[in-house]
Image 1 (tube, rainbow, N blue to C red):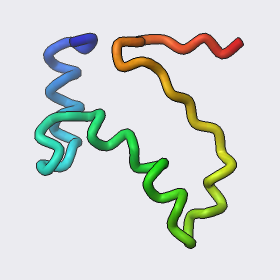
Image 2 (image 1 turned 135 degrees about the vertical axis):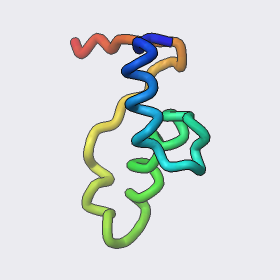
Image 3 (image 1 turned 30 degrees about the vertical axis):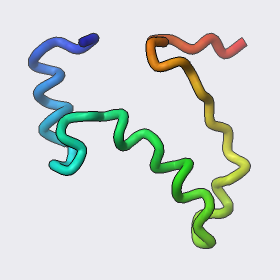
Length: 60
């Protein structure tokens, strides 16, 4: 709802079919793979959680 129709179409065209146009379905991949042995080095990297309705993040 924050993208123009053209931008939304462009993003949707890049998403895999199994997410059915839902970008948020892909956003947890970093949390999922950090427990895999191959990617455990990523665990100390910083991730943030924001409310679903938040459109900004104040990094102060």
